[in-house]
Length: 464
Ligand SMILES: Cc1ncc(COP(=O)(O)O)c(C=O)c1O
View 1 (cartoon, rainbow, N blue to C red):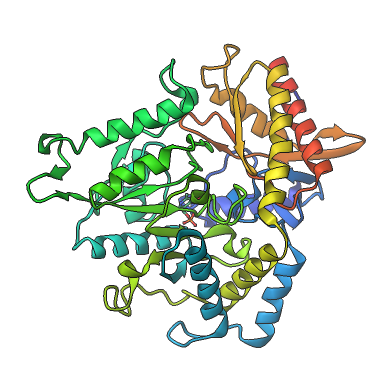
View 2 (tube, helix red, strand yellow):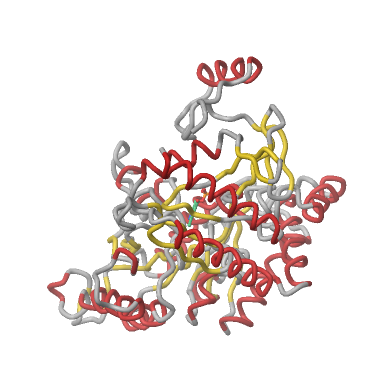
């Protein structure tokens, strides 16, 4: 264990100002003193003392294509030099071509016509999707969502996010979702395979529709009280939980039978995080709405948006001005998004991510064999999880993971003569899961380095 790190005099001046002038409502300081960063490139960020940290969370998966990706940065610079600003009521080429890319791709993959609609940020795009599904179901305002699900912290988005913590102080501005158990096999009942547990969860959900007395279905008119089911195909904040491959197919059958739409929240798992453009593609179902944000612009611009089936979003059903933000479809964001699509279509991006993910997961499995406090590891593409537990390999141990995160942020580990820090993100129902979201451009030597740094943290944690 190394000593607590002291802020430099210069950083301390900034931290004092932060304490006086900044609201803490929009952030959380997970470590004390918080580190201040000054530059970033590839898989690394550097603090004000020029200490490098390998980042294995990449701005919660907003920077899938590496910090300061030269090609995407150039697209932004070019757009700044041509059409950096234009009001959203006017058209520009980037918006139209990016919409076309997403809609044509969806038609190819899901066989569905649809349209694309932009807004700023993930939560706001979730809000827009709520309008789309409420509108399409004649104003039904009730939603299903998953236990462990996270869809953002604006008022509508937090009503379908599982944590009461995000609603507690503010009262209800709309009905909160009915939260349904997610097939989290590692913590599920014993004696079922992953697939059996997936089917079991679907059956439990389907039970709700067996009789009107289960509270969600009127069999006399064949109508559900619920408009849509919000899913994160792989849970993000919930701890990168990967459900069984049969799960969504079986769930979607129940939804289709009862006229309930499926909204796939791809804000964190989209844009190749799991080796596919959309993570729902792994599960052989047709979503009704897709919501995206984060890595669309590699974190260079807060552009987000939705794709929805034509029947739900055509201008007759969802008329002009149904939603609006001054910065929606801003040309800087659409230029980067378009370049990202071009870049990822030029090579087999999915295959590359799957191969790196497999390699990384094998390294985690090796660590799991050597460190009993790793209860579970899993991964799909480069969305990887490592669950930190007590010595029994099961009881969640948040305190140990918090310790590891703090140690990583000290920036004092030595690998092959290089002094480094490690940036990790914490997720999970018990906040004991390392949710690993490395750059998709990470090199194999950098994966090895990440594993060595994780190993050092595990050694520190077990010796503590
Ligand atoms: C799955 C998911 N949905 C929605 C959001 C909210 O997006 P934003 O933070 O851009 O508002 C997030 C953010 O982490 C997310 O992971």
